[in-house]
Every structure is written in structure tokens, then in C-alpha cells.
Image (cartoon, one colour):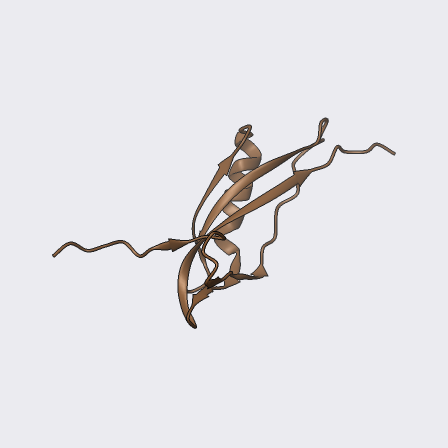
Length: 103
């Protein structure tokens, strides 16, 4: 008998109720942002609403990526559900960095 990994659902699964954010604090960017932009990350939300794993996409920024990935360990969601039962879910999050203004 082969153990199958639980299916990971996503926004393309219309019959799944997506997770609801309870806590998703994103750390402030250290230093100045000269040119704004967006970072994409994918998180796998487990059936208990915790983040099982997270990956960053786009232009790498090792220092900030580390801060954000560390922060995901404290994020909490009401889990996604299928027919009322919690399921694993892949959520894409876009982080937007705005240029730092000087005053």
C-alpha cells in the first residue's frame, strides 16, 4: 500500500472555501526602498491553519526574504475547507514595497 500525500488545494478549486487570515504580520523592510516593486510568495496552509511552508518568488533579496520567511512561522489562518472539513491550501501572497520617501 502506498501512502499518498494529502492533496493541496488552491484558488483554482472552486468547491473549496479559501482560508481566512487571522494573523499575517509582514516585517518592515530594513533600510530604504529606492525603487518600489512586488514580491510574490506561496504559502502552504495546513489543516490547523498554520503555515506549513513558504517560498519566495521574483527578484531575491536574501536579507528581507529571510525576515519574511521567518515571520510566516507566526502567521495563522482559519483553514480552507472542503465540504466543511479542513484541507491544505496553497495561497499566493503579493507583498508590495513602496519607495521610501524622505521628509
